[in-house]
Length: 157
Image (cartoon, rainbow, N blue to C red; front, side):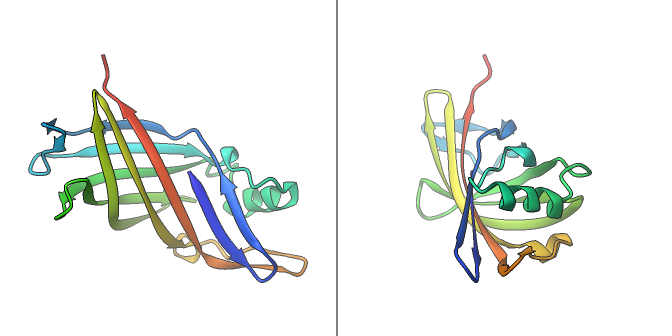
């Protein structure tokens, strides 16, 4: 997962690994059967986010109230096929800081021998989750953040 934000001083780039969860879907011939129910759940520990700047990381954990809300969670509710065979419109709920919001966006989906790879990005306004943009000394962070994910799910044996 990659999170990019902007400030009045410099861009802020955070990377992390550690998404965990499950995905239920019906697939055959290298395609997802979007007519069948597709569901999934992901969770991510906020402590896994690292920008490489200890001051920014500490402020981010304080602002996100990571002790009280240690994870970001996503629940996939539906997938719809687009005209492009490898792209789907996915919709679901994102829960951050105890606030759930419903979103819909495109994702690229690749099926390969029991492995599903989903990739996409969305832009979120952190104020929608009750979080004010951080200000650190002269640094003022913009409220919109772009989140990019690459999720690899493997079929259970």
